Amino acid sequence: MDAGAVQVRRSRRVNRPSMQKAIGVDLGGSHVMAAVISDDGKIASRHEQDLDDLAVDPVVNAVENTVGKVLSDTKGKSVLGLGLGSPGNIDPASGTILYSPNFRWKNVALGELLRKRFDLPVFIGNDARCATLGEYTYGIGRGTQHFVLLTLGTGIGGGIVSAGSLLLGNSAGAGELGHHQIKPLGGFICNCGKTGCFEAQASGTGLMRHAFAIAASFPRSNLLAKDAGKLGSKAIRKAAQNGDVHALAAWKNFTEDLAIGLANVIAFVNPELIALGGGVSSAGGYMLDSVRQRVDELTTMVPRGTTRIDIAKLGNDAGAIGAATMVFRGGLTTGARRVKA
Ligand SMILES: [Zn+2]
Image (cartoon, rainbow, N blue to C red):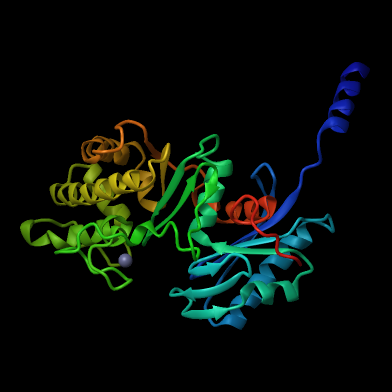
């Protein structure tokens, strides 16, 4: 390398604004993952730990342990704060978990507990809203103004960005799209107690339930004969892609319900883009081909073709990246009240 090239490199380094970092924590019902994330959305280091006791103290200890490990990876370099996404209804101003069915918690002041343990600003938000913020800021939603993420896993998590702001609603309940009913008569019973919720019909679990619901019509099918451990929505989806008639019929019913929910979401918020994440979305183009045309047919009052449907980009990291994004933005929404350390 000649001297001139060295000169150019040095001047670039001087002009480049220094990268800021934050801790993003994805707290799930079975494990916790903490990561150091830079303000370009990249993960610098991560640590994970399984949760076997969902009482408050062991969970907070597990968060402290994983966060402590990633903080030691930063070798004393400063981080802006700690963001954590958790299932449940959460007051984003205080970080108190008002209700979380996954943990069976009510009114747990998680934000306060973590602020006592770390000398950092702490932001806490619902995990699906955090994932939405992550995909919106650094994933497939980047550059859009009106964006919806739907994560199709064991349930359906969601979040809505409208005119550049994540919608929280009157009490942080906006975006619970998994629990709008699409089949109140004759649908599957949802974990929330209602019948025919979008999540009961069109999540990965929903795909399985469709396969079981029509099993009697396919007496010679081996689809559901697999070991319980191996049978999952992936097995049904792969069998459909391989032409299994039972799986194809289940897939058709599943995508019909998915399309109904997606058309409803378009009617609610007319987003520019709906991104589908979660395990079922690894079907990629196969899934998109199945739903796009049907969604178009079911879209009536909103001008057709104004909402794109695509696959999310950040995968399982969306939650942690979005949790760190809360720190960079000063809260779940732009201009959210800053919580002091
Ligand atoms: Zn429900």
